[in-house]
Length: 186
Image 1: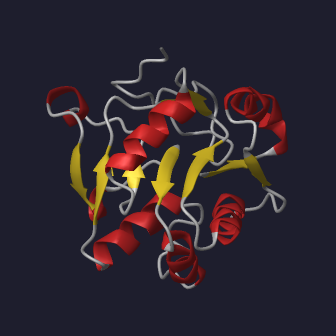
Image 2: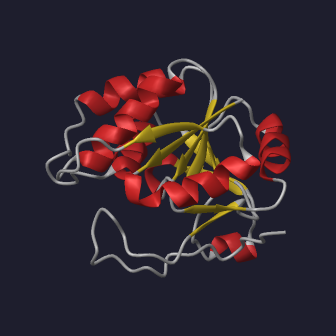
């Protein structure tokens, strides 16, 4: 399994923490630092992934203990589908793991991309019609892609990553309190 993290230089210490659990973690660093930088870096991550199955992470994700063991066991149950390992939905507490309509997709903290998915998403993302409206909307682009294909994704509960309490590098006005309702670090 390949693991790719999207990051900025300022957060390399967090990436190093991830590498303690994922020694073969591949790093895709934001090199543009402009209005479209998160989006451009996400496309580079997809290009890196190509046609292989990949677990994508963002640099501000906190991993649970035994992350690789847990995530690969979850992927083995749905290896042909997109799987989200971070969400903030109330249904996570009441329903648990479930299929979600692609249009409801949000938060790219950690997701699994099955074989060939990255290549297809990359092509879609290169000409995404809503880029000007959402210049760093990687999750909006993914939701549009899934919606157009009438595809669902698997929302895995409990979440295997959490979102760090930290100021957003994309938009400092975003709340720093965007945490999972089901993350258990153990």
